[in-house]
Length: 188
Ligand SMILES: Cc1cc2nc3c(=O)[nH]c(=O)nc-3n(C[C@H](O)[C@H](O)[C@H](O)COP(=O)(O)O)c2cc1C
Image (cartoon, rainbow, N blue to C red; front, top):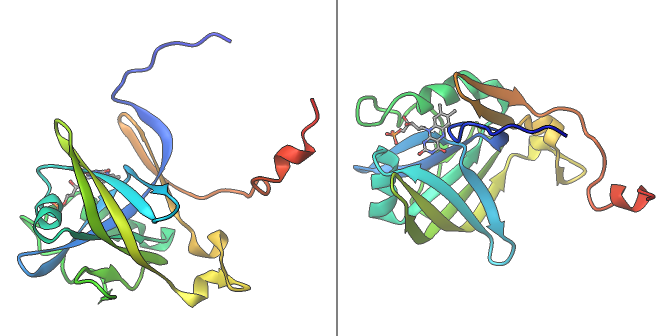
């Protein structure tokens, strides 16, 4: 198969599109983050990579707390808005309905799933910090469950691809099959 080298600026693979929440100057602030992932089962650890210049990063460094909120596709315009505006210029504190769990970190009611986290470690890179956070609690809207289990069709998570000059949001597509089971049907 013939392969060519790709410009390193490209990230054409799929990423989750989440909203990071924090408190800065005693007010909630929100930004989009797509460089984010769960990285450990027990304890439940997550990483988010956030630019040093973002107001959010200052809030996270001050409070050692942040939230990860999963928007549904229905919220996409508002979600993009918080990714193209800084809390330095615009007050983003009242864009969403907010609730609080056990930590002083804003969680978004309109999102399907929200996680409150404590910072465990900051890894400093040249322009970003990788924030390693421990999830303390996760909250899901009951309406996004089927038979007591989170239902991706109802949650409508947003996917992001960052091909240069073609940054795009996508809606999760069709189910392919059950993970950890399909391989058992594979015959060499
Ligand atoms: C689609 C999209 C994805 C983004 N992903 C990230 C990311 O992973 N990490 C990051 O630091 N900034 C990311 N940003 C940029 C921030 O969301 C943006 O700069 C925001 O305005 C920062 O807000 P703040 O200054 O209020 O913290 C993304 C923006 C968009 C539109």
